Image 1 (cartoon, rainbow, N blue to C red):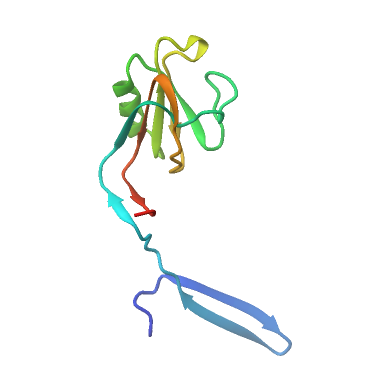
Image 2: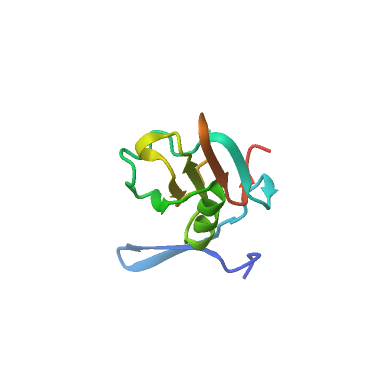
Length: 128
């Protein structure tokens, strides 16, 4: 094969009389700076507005349970697949207090908020 590796795509289509095929290589690399550790942001809410009610889950955010500390929330995210990030609500946040939420996808756009902690899994930072 004239390709670096066999990963790629093949498209086939029927034209009157015979099949046509096209193969092409797909680049699987993401350019940017690799961050090989968890990023922890104090006083930040990375699920702001994404969950309607305490204890709810969505397709992209999973309620992981009530945890006494942000470290417990982080540990729960590490036990959960997939979990690309987490947000923990502190004791002063009423019905949301102690709630731990995991992000299924790598979305990072935290809003400033007191008594909250958010974490992001190792990732590639495409802006750098």
